Length: 494
Image (cartoon, rainbow, N blue to C red):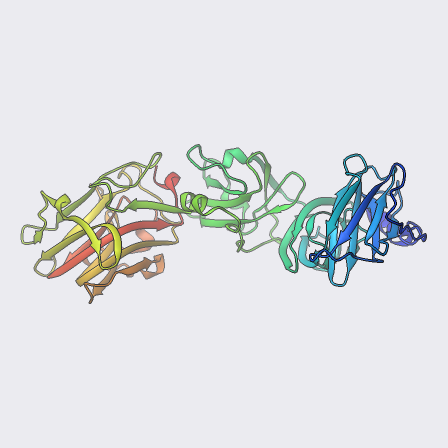
């Protein structure tokens, strides 16, 4: 409770910490001082505006008091010799500026430009038995109280990257929030003041495989199984939170979680690759939903590597696009029996890698097929061996481009000598041979397992997949291009 009392003391002393003298000056430079001019974006001077100068640690410390002054008729104020490291905050007419300045590194004349103010709405996770927290904004006199759920809002903040501090009882955590011009920042849970039965520490680099691109920010992967995690200690992963070494909450999501199989993958947004990351869990009163912004700010090329698996685009003959540590394999073309005829034949299928046409650039695979009911011709590619099948529980969707006429299917299969072999099946028909269709298949789109034609359903294949296949039935004309799987990456099929 000492810190709570300390904050009440700050609030009581804010007036005493202000200098009532007006420090506006003329444009004549004073000895050992630096002139600062404040202007709007159109270069109009900001005249007679209130200027607050405070130590960067204020209001966390009372070693100095807040100093206030006013810009003069030309928008100038000055830093004097005592202003070694100060935060300058100026607000006027719905605009503002917040800068960290020092007399040591400021030129004799410097210009600060105003911009529309923003606001922030956020949340801090409160400790048990605490029904509010104090939120401080370093370098300003802002000290506010959250509601009983830890929610807080602060308006009229000049655009800047601010350091905040949350205090509840004897617990305190610092965190940063970026305020953008004219925008409301909805940052959800930004700090965690709770206690946790279980915790684990990682280096950010431990969550990034060697093949992954280095970027800031990026997304790391926490892969759990029976050998490294006790699944009985967690509420289905919903109680798992990630923080940095200051206690600031990191955005995260569950890619998939299977308590029965004792396998899970979680994604966590990493501010940089040198960060220390803490995984906290076991508090059943502190559950959260997947972050909606985990991929926000991630470069497109990084997202593509970490969240999508590029299977084949038919630009390299029968070679797939898979790269190590995935298994680079060739795709194949085959028939379900001798009664099937096709063009190309099984022996010369690479001859049917042709120009995609119909408004699509590059190459595609084109085949025609005739078969009696119950038989088919098909494109296929092995992704994992039967001895080490893929766990596809975390996939978001399968995407490919297709055109033609006739009935076809997509299947995710578990093949080999095992008695458990079978497939998850999706069926569709094509009506137009002159127009490409972007097909997106999600796990819920597969036909429920009925054991017809080997269809055992998604639930029985998702943990034990070895290959994918696209089949043409009866009389069909199929054009196929650009097959991708979203929600997994190379580490999921190594």
